[in-house]
Image 1 (cartoon, helix red, strand yellow):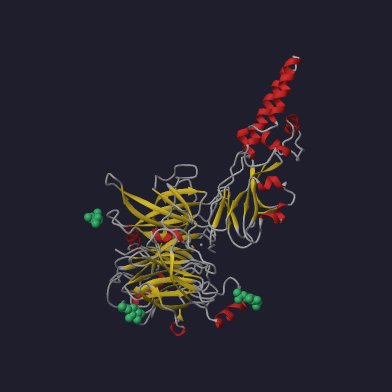
Image 2: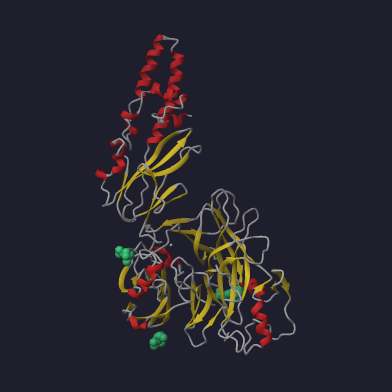
Length: 632
Ligand SMILES: *[C@@H]1O[C@H](CO)[C@@H](O)[C@H](O)[C@H]1NC(C)=O
Ligand SMILES: *[C@@H]1O[C@H](CO)[C@@H](O)[C@H](O)[C@H]1NC(C)=O
Ligand SMILES: *[C@@H]1O[C@H](CO)[C@@H](O)[C@H](O)[C@H]1NC(C)=O
């Protein structure tokens, strides 16, 4: 059985780049509502995790991870550098060594003609694999001109890369850092799937390194659609499976329908002699289905892993999917399990065939006059007849149907890892680690600012001072504002509730940063000073989590309700002059604070006298009085 792809080990997911990691014991799918609740939920940098956040000034895009065989060193491909981190002890990983690997000045200059020199013309590391005991192999985008190199190790320290050791890496790393790719090393041979050109419309599956001939997919035969996007490569005994998504061509009624696929190539493929020279002769692909009744199909695969342990007699691939469509702006995700037996069976079944005249796909049976079966991993040269057949029959007729294990709305999972765990009774359970990321441009840290939704009828929005929250560096997730901490991120953030035309800040946060010291912030103009300084949570620069909130709205609710009750009582009591006197006394008392409520906001001067409350409740235009929101 093959090991999991490097870098997918749950431990390696812990520290560096995942913003959220969720630990789930999968309950039965379809529990209604939002779906099952993760057992444990972590933010990046959470102190409860074994590894916390490593960051260092000048280092960014911690994209590629590789765990050493002994588990003590984490190699990390960052923008223009490769790092070795010591992760033997819990806490912040220690930097053991760092070697720069920038794109050359020449390539950067060429790149800057067509691409953004501030964001794209760098060497983003995309492939990092362990070749043997003394060498790593790395590939990067190299300013839109992919390059690869061997990196020598000495006691798991990295030795510098000499420029003459850098070779072309087309087909192994994408050109564009935003393009997906996958690579897996099997017995010294690298199988990779990525985009093979500058424009990003020529996907390729390629075999390189190792003793066997270099083999590629054929571009002109359209074995892969121009937008194919690879998410995982999983080796098995005889074959290597690739997981990807692409626009489907076989469903004539749908335009731009995305579909998830598994493709496979035989490890012992040597390419054709006359036909399909230096091309795969065993490339086949099949559709993956991950659906749950009553839900939109989860047709976009994001990541796939093989369960490494002997969890059940039949091995399964676990894959996380999202949907091309959204209901009411809500994303949803699903995890499906695919049996390797089912995948194999699809590749042993009938084919689909494109009728060139009608442009329709039809079913084609297994040819009984060609033996061994075309595309099978049989040894020996294939006949021209078999290869001619393979050129046109690369899509299998049968779909591989997955079992949905988890369906959850309101979240977009992008990565997963799985492992088997035994409970005290000796029963095996599957544990899933699911990562989400709303940004993997990977920031140094993200701050979550929660917003309590006190009224289900109100609509909520976030603002930075008087402006809307910056879209480039923040996103609203489950009501919370997730803020990327970078230069210029400091300042006042407020969650506003609006109901029946009234607005008030439910919660206010001051995010401290050197570039915007509190006292000088222009954002504070127009906001009464004491309302700013007292209640706001001061947050340091790093990965601290701001969780404190203002109790102002609770206080208002209580105050207003009390005032209404007492005012009602007042009307009744007006009958008796003595009663009226008593009642007035009580209402007046309400304007001053009960001692226990002395919390966040300084409110004395903002609380109108109680008899004003009733006016606000009935006069909708009174926007100077926030209390109307609470009452109506
Ligand atoms: C990008 O190009 C501009 C203009 O030539 C230059 O000022 C800037 O320093 C360049 N940025 C980088 C990161 O090279
Ligand atoms: C590891 O691979 C590199 C590159 O192919 C080679 O130079 C080196 O000799 C190999 N080392 C061992 C110990 O096999
Ligand atoms: C793996 O699974 C097979 C089939 O269920 C079983 O016979 C075998 O004992 C298992 N091996 C281990 C190490 O659990």
